[in-house]
Image (cartoon, rainbow, N blue to C red):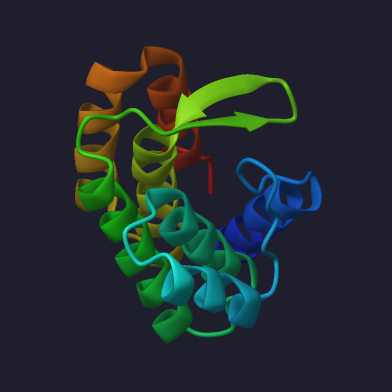
Length: 142
């Protein structure tokens, strides 16, 4: 329960800090889904949909939809080129942040440390600092 609450707080904080990529900040699931419908090949739109699902998650089903959206964002950005800025603190790509949030979901919501660590190892090759932040989330003290 504590891990689920922490996950919701992390996602909510990110969304409240205007985490949306580029000029978008889709906190609303329906708004994010509409952007995906209009641009089904847009990695950023799928990433934002994953954030919307994660930030508004009330069930494991919504968290699974977040995971599906993050995985689709990764598939659509195989060359790791779609950059996003987060409050001027990070400059990462959709692919990097998708792996980060996959790890967060696996760790905090589904208590699947093995899958979370898989995301960590992939992310480590892309962005060591972000991978270290994910590792901190994975190993939050109970």
